[in-house]
Amino acid sequence: SAIAIGYKNRDIDLIADQVLPRVQTAKKFAYTKYTQGDAYTVPPTRVGRKSDPTMVDFGGTLINAECVDWGLDDLVPNDEVEAFDAMPKPASLPNPLAKSVSVLTGLVLLDREIRVANLVTTLGTYPSANRATLSGTSQWSDFTNSNPLNALLTALDVPIFRPNTIVMGQAVWTQLRQHPRMIQAANASAQTGGAITRQQLADLLEVPNVLIGAGFVNTATRGQTPTFSRVWGKHCALLYVSEDMANADQPTFGFTAQFGQRIAGSIPMPNKGLRGGQVVRVGESVLEVISANDAAYFYQNAVA
Image 1: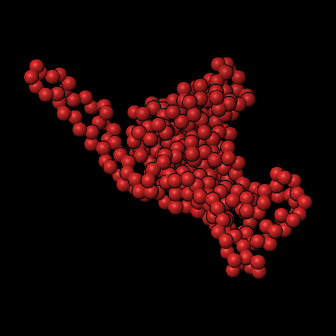
Image 2: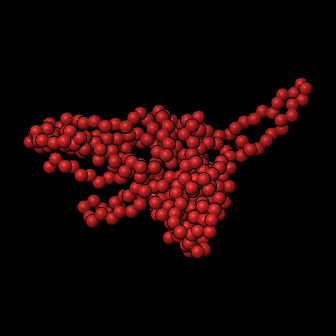
Image 3: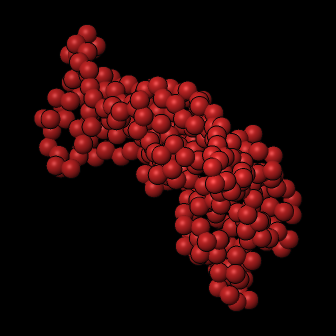
């Protein structure tokens, strides 16, 4: 057929690169985990006429790490490529090799999205003072009793590094944007119907970035009937994320160390099938790092 139809997550549904921005490193690298109190404990600063200033030592911990290789292969028979080349088709139709690269890339990136989501939405990632589990009437899906605006504003005041990024799953955003308290605050009126926009939420919280994780993953075993679930679940995280700070080895909630560029290419396999084939390989070398888990606040089970 000259018509190719594929299902995969849209690029805009995957937010891992914005949550843990990529930083170019060597395959083996080191980063500093700073002690929070160092920058806020003021030593004596007065200097005598002939004395030396107080010597200050910033006792960060140097952590050694290494990027991990992640990738997938797909075998494309040569006769499929030849058949594609011989048939009439629109110029925009990708050939089997390009189609394979696209699908493999989508799977590699979805796997990364899952890894990042698991890190960010795990309760143990955060200090005990920087997390809360909501239940019952405190969950934001309870439009009568819960107060998500107060919860979010209170959480923003907890980390010393005030969060600049709000991350939540699509299920949370669907409920939060319809919450009467949010609608009333955003419109400065008594109305309770309708929904707020991401920009209105950003303005209310004075936070520049609102990220909604909308990606799906099939949790069923291969070959079984697909069971789809949202990658980012029903949670909400408030993070201080800065690519510039990560590049300068300064405190930021987290980053992704990346060695080199993403790999995409084909390897001839003359012994596969009757006419041989080509193995299409896509992969990358990255490691997701949580470098300052106290520069954040996390609400587990924000909605029912």
